[in-house]
Amino acid sequence: MAKKKPLVYVTRKIPTEALARLHQRCEVLLWGEELPPPREQLLRDIADADGLLCLLTDPIDETVLKAASKLRVISNMAVGYDNIDVAAATKRGIPVGNTPDVLTETSADFAFALLMAAARRLPEGERYVKAGHWRTWSPMLLMGQDIYGATLGIIGLGRIGQAVARRARGFDMRILYHGGSNAEAAAVLGAQQVDLATLLQESDFVSLHVPLTPATRGMIGAQELRLMKPTAILINTARGPVVEAMALYEALKNGEIAAAALDVTDPEPLPADHPLLQLENCLVTPHIASSSQATRARMAHMAVNNVIAGLQGEPLPYCVNPAVYPDKP
Ligand code: GLV
Image 1 (cartoon, rainbow, N blue to C red):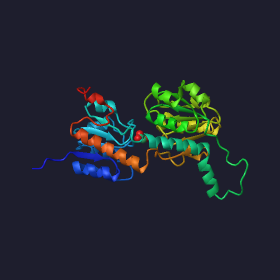
Image 2 (cartoon, rainbow, N blue to C red):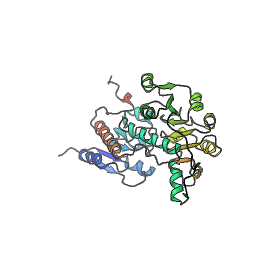
Image 3 (cartoon, protein in one colour):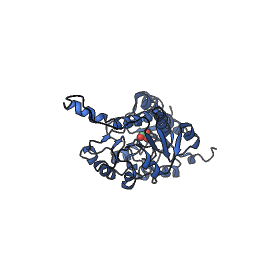
């Protein structure tokens, strides 16, 4: 009798080729809807699963893990994994995988695109033209901020923060950073380490590249925004809750900072009547920084590789809780 294939629960459609590879090796239970599986559904579907391929929209907590008595691997198709209770998974000996590196450059491209779009008021310009307001060339129309030669403050000089800094060098920017320090990389990039207050006070652009942890939740609130220049622009491609949404709204409305460009928000998605969406100087995109066709395909392959390795009892190629492998150096 043929050996029964392991069952993998996949919480949304992922790029086709990677999904096809998973189908070849495993039984796949796919939640094929546009929105994430509702909690009750997830708790039911996970009951017989040997593996889970999930997304950052799926909270995988103690309750889910309790419902998943057979689970041997969790693979998140994202570099961030704040949606997963990693400590609870580790306690059960379940490895958790993520998809770092393959999205670094694509995400940095997007962070820089947001920076440029907000600095030069691209969305406002487009709205203006399409609304039929463009009558003539005008000396003071939609004046924005210069990017070249400006000071960029990077909070979290990790992989993506460094990739953003590389782009900034091409624009002759002065680069400051706080946190995630890697002195060698910083020296190569000509980035200067400063404390958070100095970074906020001196930067024309502040770009966030920290993971969401208890220490970074709400790290940019009213007090921090008040330290920024009235001409400064905040860019968030990290996680929404790193910034206090209503404090940001007040700062933008009262001109404490000039603009914000957010690919991540709190909550996510933002309801259509959220105050931030009523502001001309707040650009919001739907968490798409890593969304190029090539990068999402690579992320899906990595997520599938992590699942397959976990089901074969091999160390995951990208594991966020190596403590589950006490024998490995
Ligand atoms: C996206 O936000 C990711 O963590 O990959």
